[in-house]
Amino acid sequence: APPREMGGLKRLASLARGFAAKAVNGPGTPAPPGGFKHPPVPDSLEGVQRIIAVASGKGGVGKSTTAVNLACAAASSLGLRVGILDADVFGPSVPILMNLASSGTPAIDKENRMLPLENYGVKCMSMGFLIAEQSAAVWRGPMVMGALGKMIRETKWHPLDVLFVDMPPGTGDAQISISQRLPLTGAVIVSTPQEIALADARRGVNMYSKVNTPILGFVENMSYYAPPGSEDDASARAYIFGKGGVKHTAEAMGVEILAEVPLDQRIRERSDEGRPIAVSDPESAAGRLYAAVARRLIEKTTPFVDEGGG
Image (cartoon, rainbow, N blue to C red; front, side, top):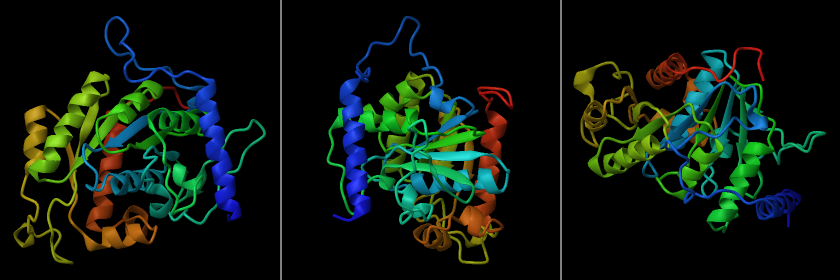
């Protein structure tokens, strides 16, 4: 097997052994008196001031693309110290989206902590760095949770102004367990406008409410199509997946709608190239939207620690 794959397999074995060696409370653990309580900030995340989940109830709505562009916009447009944790073990997207798929495995420091790979000023950690691109992590729930725990606890993240977590799609064990391991500042819900996606987005809002995580807002992705050059002309827009679905849902649930991101071929092309549009074309309509959302998320949230702490 190629050296990278062998190294990744050894790392995976280590992750699995680490889980077996330490019991972790699962999603069935009863809530403490008074309801769900956020876990303390892990030692590995001391000095990380915000942890924001980017989530979706359904796959295929552009959640990972949104997470990566928000991270890149926060770093490039706002000048923040930013990280992104790819928590989708079975379908990691961050290596491709951040042009890090050929960058090898993370280095290990003197304290045996993994050092995130970095591009566009964003520190990145993903299961995709530990296994070959075409390999599959054929794991059951406990091993997945153990691997995620290792990536959280044994990665040198700090100092960061914000850590974005690209959540796996859905509202099951993985999402609840991550909430048990990370003191989430809040969650952003990504959805497309059609009802089949919105039904799952509403479930996502309800799930995060049960773990006392504030919903910072909705992002409506693939909101409309506008021919190149006419993005600001409302009369030229075609609402392929329906109009205003996320806006109406957000209003009904009392949640802010952060952005309506168009169905833009350039977003797809830049993503496939590993050049997120937030950094490769920041003055485009989509680039400006991502920067505005990143700024709004910082405005709406409070850091865990004062500058210089941790």
